[in-house]
Length: 422
Ligand code: SAJ
Image (cartoon, rainbow, N blue to C red; front, side, top):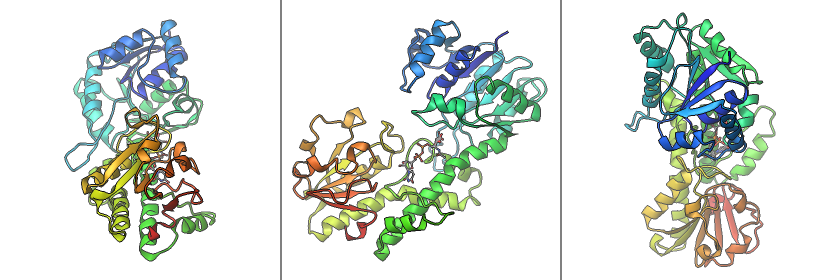
C-alpha cells in the first residue's frame, strides 16, 4: 500500500515537500488553516512563487495523489512545517506556539506505529522538552508505539525543488527507532546523504548553520567599522586576508536580514543566555549596522553644512538581499526608517518590490544630494546607475554593498573600501 503522509503547513517548505512526496507515489494530505490556500490547492493552484512548484502541484492534484484540508486526517506519517518566529518580549526565544498547535491538531488522529516529524527550525531541546511530553500525554510511548524526529529544512528559496531532493538531510530521532522510521520516509525522494543523529543535535546543528554565517558577517562588519576608524581600506584588507588558504572573511554590509540568520541565533541565546555571549554580540553588531550607515550619512552632510531636513536621499533597495522580493527583517528597511527619523527626505526605489517599483526611476533621482545602495540587486551593479546620476543635484553614491563600479562616470562612489573619506 502507498504511504499516507499528512503535512501540516502549506508554506514555502510544506507545499514543495507535499508535492515531492506525492510525485514519488505517496498519498498526500496538505493541511493549512487558510481556506483560500486549501481551496486553491484542491483546484491544483498555488499561492506562493517557487520555480517548478506550480507544475508539480497541478500534476499531483490531477493524479489524485495530493489533496488539501483544514485539519489532519489519519495517516502513516505527519510532517510539521509551520513558522517559528521569535517571542516578541525581549527574550527572543523560539516561539513554539504554531508547532505545538500543529502537534495538538495531529494527536486526535495519531495511531500506533505512526511517525511525527518536525521540519520547522526550532530551539535546541524543543522536541525532547515539549513535543515528546505532549505526545506521551496523549497516551503514546515515543520510540515504541509512535516515532518522533526532527528533520530540519535547509533549502534555499528559488532552488527548493532541486535542493529538497539533492541536499543532504539531517535526521534526528528521539530514539534510534525514531531515526530509522524518519530515514525510511525521507528516502522516498531524497537522493542526498541522510545524516542520522539525535533530535537535540539536529535542532542545534540547524540553528548553528545560520549562526555561523551571522557571526562571520558580524566579524566583517566589525572590521568595516575598525577600518573606518583607522582610515584603512576594508575591502583591500579582506581581499588580501582571504588569499590565506584557511581564511574566509565575509562581506560587510548594512546588516543582516531574512527569516533565518536574523532569527535562529536568538533561539540559542534564549536557551543559554549567560553562555552564548559571542552569538549575542554578533547579533548586536549586525543589528547596529543600519545605525552605523546612517551615522556616515550624517557625517557626510554635516561636513558640508547641510541639515538633514534640507537633504534629499535616494535609497536603493528594500529587500534583505539581492534579486529577491523578501523584506522580512530587512536592514535596508531599518536604515530607511532611521534616515526618515532624522529628517532626511527619502525617495525609495526597489525594482523587485511592487510597492517601491517605478516606471521612470530617473524622477526619483531628480535633485537628490545622495544615493545610498542598501541591497545588492543586479539593477544597481557595475555602471547600471549611470543613466540616473545626471539627474541628481550632487551625484554622490554611498554603496553599502560594494557593488557599484567606483569608476562610474559622472558620480563619486564611496563604499566600505573608501568609506572613511565619505
Ligand atoms: N550577508 C552579508 N554578508 C555576507 C553574506 C550575507 O551581509 O557575506 C547578508 C545578506 O545580505 C542577507 C543576510 O546576510 O541580509 C542573509 O543572507 P544569506 O544569503 O546568508 O542567507 P538566507 O537567510 O537567504 O538563507 C540561509 C541559508 N543558510 C546558510 O547559508 C547557512 C540557507 O541555506 C538556509 O536554508 C536558510 O538560511 C534557512 O531557511 O535557514
